[in-house]
Length: 176
Image 1 (tube, one colour):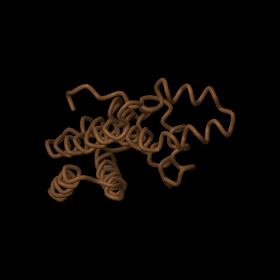
Image 2 (cartoon, one colour; image 1 turned 90 degrees about the vertical axis):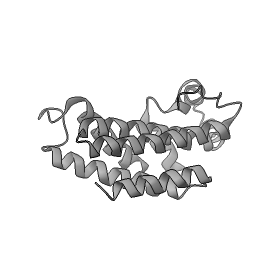
Image 3 (spheres, one colour; image 1 turned 90 degrees about the horizontal axis):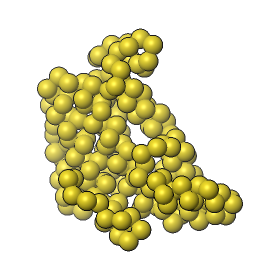
Image 4 (cartoon, helix red, strand yellow; image 1 turned 60 degrees about the vertical axis):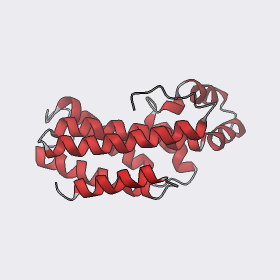
């Protein structure tokens, strides 16, 4: 994913697919880090994967989100989505709510869990910040969240490359 992403407004399908591939690649790297014993690095990759998946989902449902916002008179939110919201780099809970409103059930809870993973990635087991009391608890959560993200991705319309990556991730997960 080192190449420049296309403008999401010009090539939304390509943008969405590349972000989906990015999500899968980050999931694989998360597992690689976990296998090597780097749980915080693994958590960081998992969080990056989640953000890429949210971006893919936003762009593939962009028109629905924007139409709903316009009907509700939320012009500021329309502008925000056009400026930065499509990239899912900030406002993840609001984005998740918008996706849930479109039928993606459980996205808010998953985003909340991923934000906990993000805190662990940056702060380790700091008792005042981390949602985890032990490294083992974090590893268990990382594995469960990877499985859950794979389930979401598996339910999407996928091309062969994405299907192959999913199988590679499942195989790797089975060894950890």
